[in-house]
Image 1 (cartoon, one colour):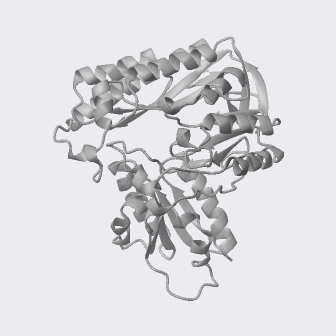
Image 2: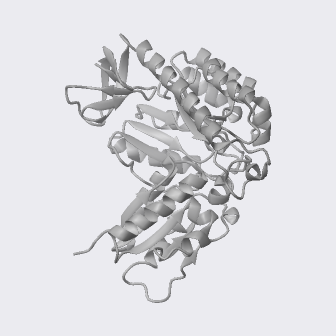
Length: 419
C-alpha cells in the first residue's frame, strides 16, 4: 500500500498555503513515504523549533526520506544538510517547481543532489499556485505576492523569500472565481509584503487596484479579507475600498513593530508612530467597525523603558485589538544582531508579558462592546464561526460549515462571543 508524504509546517500562513501546494505537487509526482518539513526562519527560536521538529519526525518515521524546505532551509541550507536526520534540502523556489517533486518520484532514475537551493534574489516571478483553500471549507487563501524589497534591520525574511514579485491580477481574479464556484464564501489575500503588490507589474498597479478589480469582477464573492499590511504603503484605492465596499472585511493586521520613533528608525521601518495613529484614525473614520491587529516587537536592541512605554501607548492610541507580540531574539545575519546595546533577556520577557497583558485587556474590551450586536458569522465548523472583524463566535446549536449565519451576541466566554 502506498504511503503519502507527511507534511509538517512551521511559521506563517503563506508557508501553510505552500505546504498545500507541495502536497498536490508530491501527489502528482507519485512521491511516497517521505517526511517534508516546511521551516520558518523569522527568529533564531523558529530555526531551533524547525530542527527539533526534524529530529522528532525522523524518530517517528525511521525509514522515511526526510526533506527540509522553507525559509530556514533557504537562508542556512548547510545547517540542515549537516543534520544526520536530513536526506534532502530544497529551497523556497525549488519547492514550488513540479520537476523538483518529479525527481523524487518512483520513475526518476539518477542521482539527486542533497542540497538544491538556488539564489532566491535571482527569482523574478511568483506563480499563482492554484490551491482551492485549505484547513476549512469556509475560507480560502490566495497567494498574490511573495518576497520583500525592504531591509528591516531585524528581519531575515527577504533572504528566505527573495525580492518582491506579484501574481498578475488576471490570474488572481480567475482563481477567486473558481473558488467562489466551489462554494467558498470568503477569500483571504496573502503574501509576504502584501502592500507592495503590483510594483513589479506593467503600469505598477497598487493593492487597492487589485482589491477593487476582484470585487468588481467577482460579484458573487461574499467576503474578501486582506492579511497583514504595511500601513505606510496603503494606496488611495484601498482606502476607497475600505470606505465603500462592505464585502471587504473590516479587519486589518498592521505591521507596526514598535511605537517609538527612534526604535523605528533603528529598525529601518518606513513609518513613524504618528503615521500609524493617523492611518488607524482615518480607516476608522471611513469604516467605524474596523478592528486592527498588529505585530509588535519587545526588547529591540537599545530599547529603554521610555521607548517601550511608547509601544504600550501606541496600542491604546491606535486602539489595537489583536496583538502578535514578538520578544526580540537576535538573528545572526541581520544588522540588528550587530548592535552592541542588546537588551537583557529577562527584561525582554517582562516587557513582552506586559504587552500581552495589555493586548488581553484590549481583546476583552472589544468582546464586551459586541454584546447585543448582530453579526454575520462565517462558520468554520458546526459550533464556531468568525465575525467580519475575525472574532470567534461559539454556537451551541450546530450550523452548516462554510455558511454565513446572522447571530445576535448574548455573552462572552474567554476569547469567544456566544449567541
